[in-house]
Image (tube, rainbow, N blue to C red; front, side, top):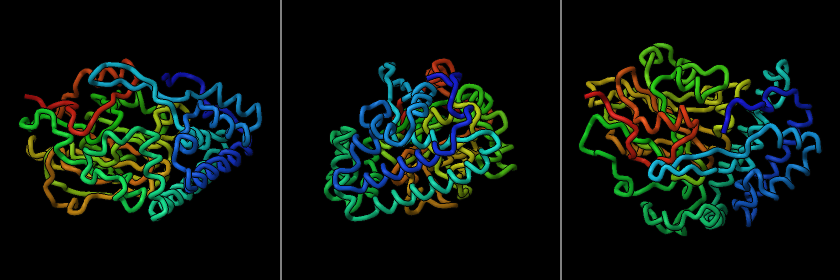
Length: 387
């Protein structure tokens, strides 16, 4: 993946493109509620698959489709930390539609466009959340498992029998047995863990994150955190971005042990958090636009230094919910499950003050030199505090 390519963000796309993309997205989310929904033939069809192309041809003109094909990548390269192997993760059709909607419009139209887009994506996300809270949505669990080959992972869950989940959303937010994700170097309080089963990027400074990864305009720590005074504590600090794909175990965990000082809910929209959106120049920054929850943890190992964990919703995410008992004033321990995302892809961003942690070099190299995410699991080491 390269963020230097020309993107549809810089083009003046006709008004009808937004209407076409909106129609296609509504078709996909409606189709997902049918008896045969939630398979690779619908929401999760790879963007370069024949069925995806068929849908695009039905709603976009020939010239428009050619522009999209020429200007967009169709996925992202991921590096497996255990093996070092690089593999290609295709973009799903609904993410690709979300990117088209995000990039629509000329510069003078963008303010109006983004308001329209926010309304559209909120409507579709709420729609999917309601669909998958319905008892009828149980019919989608097995096709989803089959699509992503999840059956071997089910014994890791607190409820391993997929037929026992009352709704698709209940299954989607399934919780893992803690012993299935042991913490690396559990006895060393200096170590920092991955907050999720995810595709992870790691940057020693926020400036490096914006140089190599976060290309959209408008990204600042005060905007991300919704708090200028809090943001100042992370000046020169490091940053980890954990992206959860829909097929991932969809809960997030504490990367450090400490005391929960505060939790702040920030309303926002539901843009895609796919790297193709994050890394494209010329569009707004989705992290600072999306709905998110900001948790501040006073880290025990460093005498109360703040660590921020930001749970970011994304396209088609129905809700962000903390586990029972996880609230302001409680103690949390590294590896403890904090909360769950309900249907869709999501992101967890972890911020550390300057000097709080030295991020592992392989993760930094993958992020900055390879410009790739690293496949990680909950509890995997991402770095450690100084000696």
